[in-house]
Image (cartoon, rainbow, N blue to C red; front, top):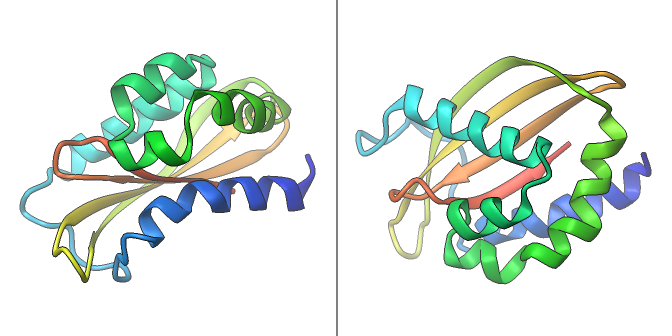
Length: 140
């Protein structure tokens, strides 16, 4: 995997959250359930592993993510990274924190999920808005 390319591409996607001016990690808001956030993050990763970009973008992305990381970008730039990881083996460690947009006061839940694949491990950071739509996505 070309580390520079992967970092650049995933950095662009994560920009959706960063552009919103989210503050650093904080306690998860009462508006979210930690187990539901973990389950939603695992579901996003499973959809990505299945290479179902249509479902991912149409059903899971919020409007900001749709404008920044649409189907074409996901297909051309993110799926090749997932393919390079090899076959999915298992979810490893998971953590959930909160984040708040300092300009709009919108709260987000941020799930960090480490995943074991056949060839290497990957870490996903996925931010969810209050509607449980993805508002930020980063893979490392």
